[in-house]
Amino acid sequence: MRTKMVLYFIVVALIPLLLFGFLSYQKSSSIVNRQYNNYEKFAVSQLETQLDNTIEQMYVVANDIHQYLSDPTLIVLKEEAPKTYEGFIEKKNFERYLEAHKTFNTKGIYLITRSGYYYGSNLLNTENLFNMPFWQEASRLSQGESWIGFYKADYYQDRPPANMIGLVLPIQSQYGILSGSKLLVETKADELFSYIRFLEKDVHAFVTIRNEKNNVVYQTKSKREELSSDIVRKTTLKSYNWKVEVRVPKRLFYQSSNVIFNYTILGNFFSILLASLLAMIFSAPIAKRIRKLKESMERVSAGELETRIPVKEHDEIGNLSLSFNSMVQQLKELIKEINETERLKRKAELRAFHYQINPHLLFNTLNSIQWKARLSNAKEVQLMIYHLTEVLHENLNFSDELVPLRKELKTISHYLKVQEIRYGHMFSYEENVSPECVEFLIPRLSLQPLFENIFFHAFEDGKGRITLAVEEKSDILELTLVDNGKGMSEETARSLLRPHPVNEKGHGIGVYNVDQRLKLHFGNEYGLRINTTPGQGTIIIMCWPKRSASNDKSNHN
Picture 1 (cartoon, rainbow, N blue to C red):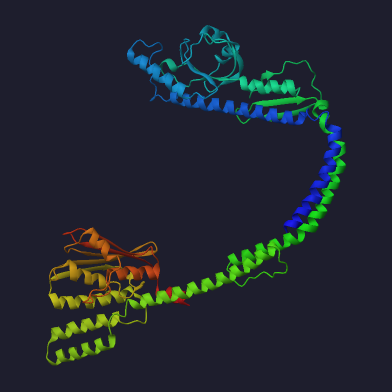
Picture 2 (picture 1 turned 180 degrees about the horizontal axis):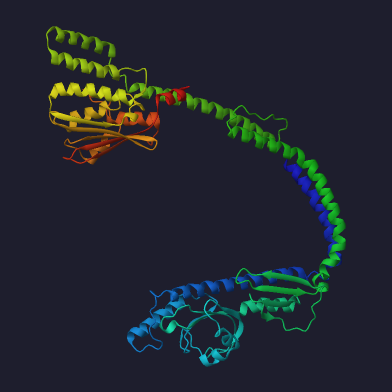
C-alpha cells in the first residue's frame, strides 16, 4: 500500500506542480514580492484583532471599576483632597485598586470628579485635558452612555504627546464625590496605528473606522476618490459594534493574481482532472477494504463475535484484517472462559456458605432427642429442640438462595424462642416491619448470624433489648437491627466485615459472610454497615434492592 501511495503522489502532485511552478515562475517573478492580497488580508486581520481586543479589554476594566464604585457598601472615598491621614490612606488604596487593573498597554486609569479633582497614579495637566475636544464631548455624557475614540494626549506632565485610544464612562452613583464623576481609561494606540500605517503605506489602502453611532473615529488623510471598482473589506467588531472599512484600488489588488490566473487555470484544470481520476482508481479498492474493516469492528463492538473478514491480499490492510480475525477469536474464547469461570466461582462461593454441617445426621439426632424429651415429659427441652429444628430446617434448605423476608423473620422467631428457653425472659424483642416489605426477597440465612452475634458478644447472660425495623427507601430496602448491649470498638466492628476463618466451635456463618452474600447476589454497592460505641450498644444496617419472587424467576429465565 505504501508503494501505491508513493506512486499516487508522484503522478498526481509532482508532475503538475513542476509544470505549473515553471510557467508561473517565468511570468510572475517580477511581481511576486507585491502580493497585495496577502498583505491586505494579514494587515486588516491584525488591525481588527488588535482593535477588538483593545476595546473589549477597556470595557471589561471600566465596567469592573464602575460596578465597584456603584455599590454603596464599597464606597470608601469621602473627600476629594485628603485632609486627614485616614483620607490619605483611602486615596492611596483606591489608586492601588485602579493600578491593579492596568495591563501592558494601559497608559492610565483615572476617576475625575465634577470639580476636576482626579484619582490616578500619573500626574495630569487637567487644564490641557479639559481643553481636549474628546473630553468636551465626553463631559456632556449622561449616565448609561459612554465615549471611546482616538486622540493625541498632551496632558501628561513631562511626557511628549502620544497616540491614545480612550474610554470615558460616567459613574452611576449619587453618593458624595462620585456624583457627576467620570472614569477615564486610556490605552496606548501606537501598535494600532502601526497596523493602520502599514495598510496605508504598503497596501495603498484607504482606512475608515466608525464608532457605534456611525461617526468617523479615524480616516486616512487622502484625496483619492472612492470608486465602485475598489476592493472593499467591511467588518463589524464584536466590541461595541465598531466598523472597519479598508478600500484598495482594484488594479493594485489584482496586479499579481491577474498574471498568474491565466496560466494556472489550464494547469489546475488538468491537475484536478488527473488527480480525481487517479484518486478514484487507486483509492476505491483501498477505501472499500478499510470501510469493510470499520463495519466489521462496529459489528464486533455490538456483540457479533462471529464476524470475520475474508483476506485476499497480504498487504498492510490484509495483515490488519488477519490480526482483527485473530483478536475476535481470542476475545470470543476469553469471554466464554470468563463467563464459565465466574459462573463456577459464584456457584462455589454461594454453596460454600451453606455446607458447614451434615444436615442428615443432625436432623436424625435432633428428632431422636425430641422424642426422648417428649417421652420423658420434658416440655421445655422438647420445645427448645422443636424451635431449633425449625431454625436448622430453614437454614439447611438449599433449594432457593433467595427467600421472602417473611420466611427469614419466621426463622428468627424460632431462633428467639430457643434463646428464650435458654436464658428465660431476660431479653425483649421488638419488630417493626411494614406488610408490603415481607414479600421482597432476601438471601437465605441473612438475619440469624446477626442475632447470633448479639447473643454471643453483645449481651451478658442474654439480658438486653433488641429492635428490628425494615423500611422502603426508593428502590431499596433498609433493615436496622439495634441492640443495647456492651457494644464494641471501631476496629472490632471493621474486623467483622473482613474475611476470617470460622472458629473451631462453629458459631455460624458470621457477619462477614452475610455481607459477602448480599454483595454476590446484588452488587458491591449493597451490604452491611455497623455503627457502634463501647458501652452504648450496636446498630447494624442492611441494604439490598427490592426484588420480588416474580422478578427473580424472570431474571433466571
